Length: 303
Length: 322
Image (tube, rainbow over all chains, first blue to last red):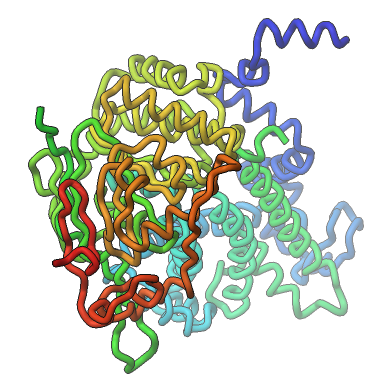
């Protein structure tokens, strides 16, 4: 055994580095995904929810809006309704499947746009400091003094209900958390020696931001986003509860929760299953986000 | 042949405003106070002093990595003190920096190939393939190899990272390199290797160094001329041999007496300074060194010392004024 090790090192003094050379990106992505069980679970959950969201109409056993009062409030596993029926006799399983697309769209669109806007403004505030910083952070402070739900309600009251307006109002209320997190990260990063070293090399300003600062922001943004998706899905529930969210009868996990709360003691399945759906989705996003963060960090690669 | 000046620093000042509280008057820390010197082409100019004396700030101000309060920096006959970011950026091809901490000065998310080709790319030099070739070339010059191209900084030892930092500075073939304590973060055994590498690169590429260090042994070994700094001021400037054999300023004498003796029979007078370095927030009146100076005179307490030229040996001390 020893002999082979010696000869092989004799031929090539850097075997590990030779292997690392030029592996196609998707291949190393797949290889590292297969190595991480939590990554796979998160990935599969997200794929599953996405599949339900996209193919819901063909998968769902019933029409989600078909009310049958004779079959109202059936407990789970009765009469062909796996997860039971609600107060109007609609199949909860079908409503969950149909609602997944709404919840997914709200969660992902809000995170995407709030993340983009907040990150950009946080970058500008943190990197350029001065007036930009003062103005942006004062706006953030003012918005922080408003309760989140109140702000969303006001916007929805002005613009009217509807999926698009929910997203707009959530983005409007949600970008500040990204701006704050990103700004503080950028403040720490811009003083790092490798950024000074970039300036000394003669890298243009925008390239320093895009190539050297932004990649170092991925970790906090991913962690934040995987938490925020769940928050926004639940925020939709709060807005629906107050009557401004996704309008019934269109199903969404949030308004299923708020409609079911009246029956919490008599028919627990009305709110339990949408709750579980939110938890599982949030879990999947978090697991996948954790794994993605590890992959993007070269120091943790391969572990 | 008269030496050709490459870099001239004139009355460089860098003050930091310190706010101690609301309604309190603003105070200033004079990190660098009226420093002037000239660096000639092809030489190694040393800047020495204890920590906090402003030598690193001077180095960074020269490259405009820190905005200075006032002063002029003449590089190849051009005053670069007021240049815009973009104009300065283009000039940086000729002036590079090696940083003190090889752990912090390389972006952890970039491979060595990306780190080394970036300087060439941002200055629009060579094609993509040629840049890779150049990177491999420079890696071999600094004692690493092609195998390291796709590795990340954290996979290297401190000495190797400093070699990468040096390679990154040299790949543009600059005129001037400012080395800010390039070896002080390294093991002693590695230090000599990196210093020999710096010397070899200087010969091969006709580099001019400004070498910032607190290690007098290293400075004596590699520099041609040395400036000694104390509390933001340049107190003495001369040829390296003159400084080490015949120091004029009392501070320099004290500093040199702290160098360990290498021969057991050798004896020398140890000058022990009393007290600590005063706070730069309110430096002493007159000569800033006077509270600790063994040769302090009456005049030192009230008047700033003039800069006296003793023939290629400049010193700021009342002892030499007539």
